[in-house]
Image 1 (cartoon, one colour):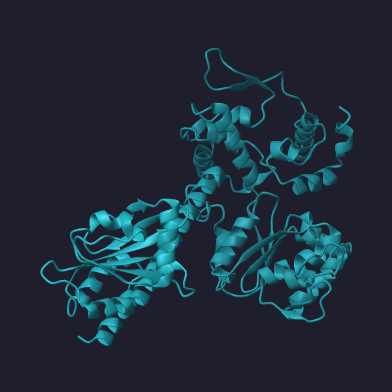
Image 2: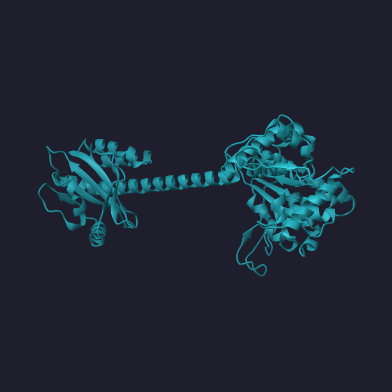
Length: 516
């Protein structure tokens, strides 16, 4: 085989395999058709450790072995590499100081050493060819090694990238598992609980419309699972591989609404230090989930309608229109039809977003799902809190079924997590977790249980009255604080913006609790 044929065969071998350890043996077999080579080792320069690391060898599986260098010797090694010299060293010869640390493995063999250089001529490593003991290398073999250094350097660089990607992938997987543990989830995607029971009518409508680009309006109480349904719509749509962006319209201050939704150009207003893409641009090719769309101010409703009508938008401060391809799924817990009737929501926007409305029933209307949901949240709490898994008992399910669930599925998740904490791994303390008035801890440990503080009232409270007292109790405990780790929203297990909205509806003012 001629030299050019050998080089072509080696380039092809290296190009076909990403991991160097899988190709170095084949490279040796190709060389043996013309060169009396016994083995090939490729050493990579580890600059931070000032060492040579064996990354591939046809003779040993000792990948990862490192030979440490003194600082001055490592500098000499780098200078030798940059010169591009090829060394031919026979048994008994003195080795140059630059490569002396590796001599112990090769003193009794005829070896050829060549530096591996990156395209910018920076040193990447060393190639070491060992000769067949019965036939030493000749001068033309040194010339062949010089020709081989370029493909071997490319192979070492590719191998380093593959190893770096493997390290990053392992780190990302570890981060994902850590995040899932904190969230109390065993895997990234969980099935939709209730799809075959209480949510079956919802799922049927979702599957009916998901693959079209029709705008969808999800209607349901806070905590009923609107975001979960929106994600199911996205996953089953033709845009499933695109982005899914959730925007809580009630959480954006009116003065930032345009910038958040449509983006802004650099210098368009004080503090606009650079170009920013809005949520519509970020969702291009995917789905934009506009949660709590009923909270949009009137001015933003006008601009949103314009984007939905023709698919074009202008960034704040921008002069050129931008075309976006976005499927909009909106959601609200408000009665938008009544808001349209009173002029608080634009009628034309209502018609645009409510092409296909889907009503998500509250949890109290699909109690058949409570056992499966409670078990799911118990498993999640066990993972998140690092406690032994305790599943709800029949008595627990009866208690859960008798509760009205004003916070719906989100509240159920909070109650089960609270029950897991109170039970401390021995059981789920569902009764005190539901908020019984007095909690008694038995002597000698055990599960906390609640007892009644007195005879029941002759008047059964309405749902709003119960909710008011529950929120008032949380505000008293937090002295009117709503957000943060010590806020009432955390105690109640709901979003701070949702809590504020509910307080306005119920006529509760947090100021009266800040003086307590």
